[in-house]
Image (cartoon, rainbow, N blue to C red; front, side):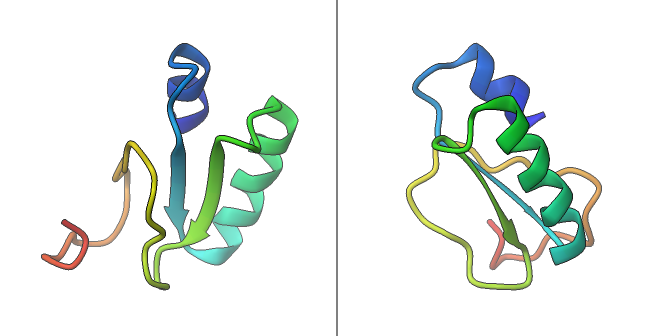
Length: 68
C-alpha cells in the first residue's frame, strides 16, 4: 500500500513498519519499485523514524498510545 501511495503522490515520504522478516521482503519490493529514496522499511519494535508524511497501520498487533 505504501508503494502505491508513493506512486500516486510524488512528494510523499513513507515508512513501512513491521517485524524484521517482513521488512526484508518490503525493502526488496520497494527497491524493485524504484521508490527506495522515498519509501523505507523499518522494524516496528524499534523506535519509530521521524520525517515521514504517512504511517499506515495494517494487520499489526494492537496499537498502543506510543504508536499514535
